[in-house]
Image (cartoon, rainbow, N blue to C red; front, side):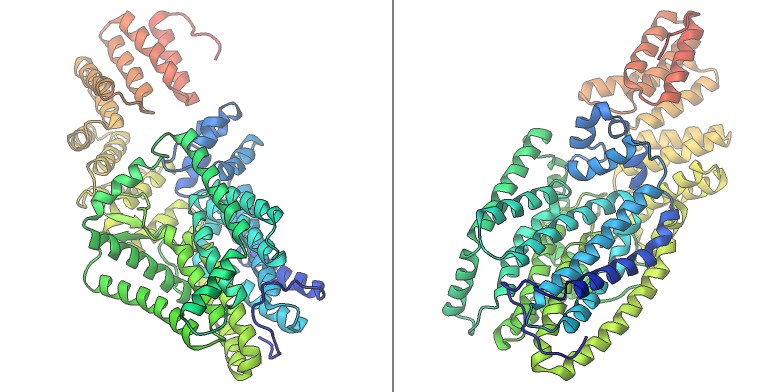
Length: 621
């Protein structure tokens, strides 16, 4: 960072000159990100990408856009219609391969990086020389764009899109907040609309609302020691932005109403809220939040090589992990408090740091992030928004040091240079690990704890099954069933997959044993039931197959549940009835199956079976 006089953070400074330098700094940051991440354009779909972009018929069909956008099949808590619309537009335009989706994510990250650089440029104020402002803005933009934690949202299309797009809307809101400080209703409406757009992209945008009061304090830099006068000064700062807060509050209420209409009285949070009981007593809840915050603080300030994708926090949190989590979290807050109390130069950076901490609260498992039993999510992609405030803190610190401690500024600049090189090396090493699902899952297994291994081995086995490597798939599923089940449903899925691959290998007895093990753990696993019934049919026991399938359908009716596999049960039951020469019942089941099945190849199979029984073609589809 160049050694030059600066003014510190000033809320009312907008640049009047040096526009070319600002554009050059932003362009440099965007270009560096594009160059570093360009290889991701050749990568495949991974993990949830297939759920959103390949196995979501409602999202792929424009005529079902309401269901596809408002009721995502990937989870009841997902209400992100604006982000899903970007997927829908790409799907509706015929984009079936991953390249276009990767390109959009990459361009979003490049845009966000450029916006961070422009924010720092504005933050430094027009009293700072353009060269100093440009250099500092470029370094801070690169600190954001090259941070290893953001490799996950760039390389992971589906889940990364939510965080990247949400951050883009909120960065534009911050740009508006710094560029046009007057508290007008026009600015309040614009901020509210951007905040609503961010919420409709991902619900954790609420962290912006929590962070904004600290943003305003950082920009204003209230003077004086802590005490009544200090609190009064802070109150004056906040009251000067009352219209903006009103606009954001109205936007938040509008979001809740939209969510209520789309998802019902529980706002789609039923399964999420049910996780509270699994966490344990109140002290465990506190430790969970502290451990989550400590993880994010550590990841933001420590460069780690190839962190596990979709990282989780095993439960319960105890022992050394608990002590370290509390110490790191308390230490971070204490350092910010000391900076505010003891140094005038430290108040603005500390304010930005507190904005960073508060922006983390929605992703720190205060409301449990939904995942499998025995763990909670603490994924790297959740840092996409909070890291913005760290970079703004760095810019604010550079501005303050430029007038008070030029020597320290040179040291900070040198440290930032080394840090950026280390970041680029870490990102370069991590990017290839996202190239395909086999690589991702093997990497995740190597870097994750035992709590995640069962479903990671299931995912790895599914990848091998999809690529036709049955031997590797069998090995992966055998590994999956070795570990103690975190839930009966997950264990049932593991045994079902093992049975499925054993059946494909022609191993009838091991396949039947695996399907029975799955049903013993989870009698509602329809796919295990259908698989076992098909094996019974193949062995000439159509009556046993029909009994299995009838029981499965009876359980569905008794529970009053819908299930995407229901059509498969009716299809297989029709085949069993056809084997038993119960022609009318077979026709009835085939016709019911066609009401539920949307997969085109399976519909063709049902129609062929129906024609074989009736002797009459089913007709045009």
